[in-house]
Each structure stands twice: as structure tokens, then as C-alpha cells.
Image (cartoon, rainbow, N blue to C red):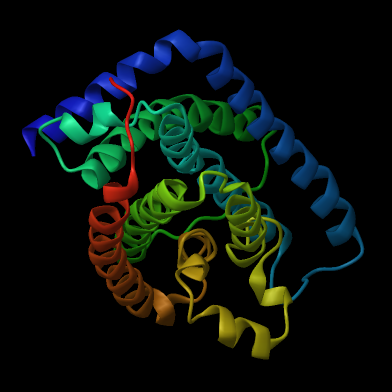
Length: 264
């Protein structure tokens, strides 16, 4: 465990080199909040509620879901793995005294934590500056359940991108897989609009997949909605986490034998 904490720590510190990118991400987050502020302000000017949401609830949901999607940087994992496989430099990950999957989880969490600090600061500053109406549950149990779900969701997304990355052992170009994943995730996670605006039949199908619990459900819990789904969400994400832990290990051991490294 200590070595993985060290990986996360080094990864966190390394982001100082990319401070400009982090600042751009923070500005982008503020821009998204401004967009939501104007858009939903116009919508709720004519309506008291929309699909059971008041304006403060909808605005707060958008902030939470945008924030979670902004710090979800696991896409870098699949890109780094596939790129190093194509260049023949993946060997360096094969010889380090650590499990490759856990290594990338620790590395990505280090990056996420760095981004979290700046993006959270920018979000809070904007909300306070413009005195936006903010609505968040005060129930500590719901907040804890949401945090657990967020952590499990972030780990799962890293595992998913790790799996897509190691497919490059066999296919080299995995851009099609990444494009499909990005489009599906953007829709099912509810980072664009609350999924409660969709037909019930569609939502029922989405509950089968883990993406429903990555961004949408934690955001809903933090505004005091969908509380009856909290335990189910934790169980479902835990099951997918265990599934991909095993799947990735099997896939890595099977696919790595066809890799021909060219040095470290």
C-alpha cells in the first residue's frame, strides 16, 4: 500500500509542471457553471419546477455533476497505455515492482486530487461571488454514501480505461473503442442533463450499468434526491469494481504475451 501512496504523491507533485492546463480546466469549469446559471435561469423564469427540480436544485445538480465529470481524468490512462504499447515502451510498467492496474489507479488518483483542489476552489469562488442559490443535503449519511459512490465510480472508470488501454496489445489502434466509450459515458452518467428527464423505461435500463452511479446518482444524493437508491448504487459499483479487477488481471496476463517491447 505504501508504494502506491508514493506513486499517487509523486503524480500529484508532477502536476505542478502542468499548472497552466489545470488553470484552463478550472476556467472551463467556471464557464460551464456560468452556462448553467444562464440556461436554467431562463428556463425557471417561466416555471417554478421542471421534472420535480426547483431552480436551486437543478443548478446545484449541474455544479456537482460537472465537477465530477471534470475531475474524472481516467481517459488519460487508456491513452498513456495504448501510446506506450505502440511505441514499444510499455516495458517500463512491466518491470516495476507493482501491479500495473493498481499502479495506474494510484497514479490517476494523484492527478485527480491536484485538479480537485483547483477546480473546487474555482467552483466555490464563483458560487460565492455571484451569490448563486445553492441547495445541498445536510444529511451526513447521504453525504457519506455519495462520497463512497464517487470514489468507487472513479476507481471503476480507471479500471475501464485500463481495460481499453491494454486492448492495444492486440488491436494497436483503440480510437474506435474510446470514441464509443466517451459518447456512452457522456450520456449515461447524466453529466449533460439529469437522467430523471428521460422516460422511466430508459432509466430502468441505465440502472443495470455502472455509469448511472458514477456521476448522476451521487449528484442526486448530494441534493437530497433518489435517497432510496444509495445502498443499491454502492452494491452495484462494488460488484463492477470486483468484476473488472478480475477481468483486467486475466486480460493483462493473456494479452501481454503478444507484446514485443523494444526497451525501457
